Length: 628
Image 1: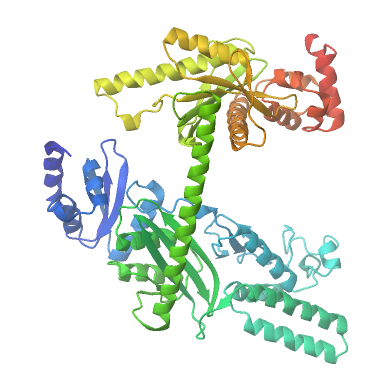
Image 2: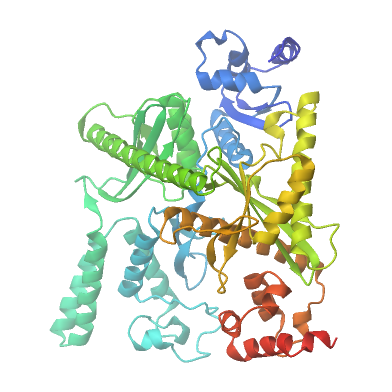
């Protein structure tokens, strides 16, 4: 940070109030890079820029990139915390703790606001009056849980609008086989059906005993009345309920509802492990790894709690922490407001609760070891793949950055070229690029590829000049660095075309093609003269297949979006039996009319039905496409 920026910021600090609020640190481009909260904004924000000797490495890096800051006043510390959570979720600042994958975990949703509720798995949390349970770490276990609940309670799986459609049709097969109580036919009242979902909510919260006893009483009563078939049904439900309970380990005799947070750190890699205890039973756990973190343990746990509980709906009565944090009280008050009842957040020092945290810490240690093992194994495998690629193609250096190109069009119209990027054998989607072909008429893949790569390299040259002139920084460049290797979705002709282009540009980037067999599957590599054998049972071959599939997928997806937006007429529309749906399926599978035209009948039959496939094949092979 230069003196001019520092002087401007220090001048602005003088106007900050001693009041609670949220501050937003911004870089030179106006992008928010950190969001924080404080009960005294003036003191907290000033501490970043005055007496900075005690700052952590992360804070020093943050301050170096701050160009300006804004702030928002709030009425209380808890309101500041809530606003901080929302702003972090919205802006995803670089220097905040971020749980980037929290949306991938499934929830079980009960549509409590409906007269006849439904239950299903979802990955979206909506403010719609429904009850959500989760998140769950395993999608498979979540499905098994839901299936057991359906068997126990015989709830509907249909999407009928009830009570409007009650009695408008016969009960479905699920009722006939005893897996649905048929509310659609009035076989169960609205009150009885809703009461079942109160019990389901108890089960999902880990409370089994009351329901199990109720089922046992009904089973015994049915047996006494000689209703043995009904008694057997209750017996089966009890067994399903026990199967659900066997997945959970009893760790407390006091039936608490609590979350237990553990943590382990090694070489700046942190793992946070959280266990969910409901009614004294562990019903699930998750772990999150933060690699190469400059945060202290206290900062990381504080940031984790705010991010994690932002979307969680099934809140416990107690959260146990592995370390003390400064904003523990504010977080507890926030969770209390979310829950509607008191939620205690604290760090136990002794007794059963402290032992529970120690258990979570040990699990975090094991989870981090497993993560590092997988990471090291994956890194080793990727290095082996790149080394094998370097040896196979006789490259001078390891191809750390690989770019692959493909062209997609309809009879040459609306041609789209794409570039996918792999860094150290991993796809880097933020570096993918799309190009609308501008100078080529007709379905000329060679010239279209030449144009796309010329524009890509030329943009890189322009960025080099801008960096040298001081008008662009390297971190803002979109076409740098240049690739170590280019793989084309094509054969010898494609490679020859690009090599000729590079000769005129003075570039010596290695270029090879990924050729396919007659089934449109990856066969191997080629230069402009001959094919290069790649063992079909090797890791390198599987990697090349993945690259070719990915560049084809991206080309087809990019073209489809452009095609749907343009809405122009296709020659496929002239073929009997080909409507919009089949036309799109063919284009998505083959990516161009030319490839559809050259496809075998068996290949077409893999995409559309046999009659339509025959019509398409005959159209292109009987001259039908030339009659127009």
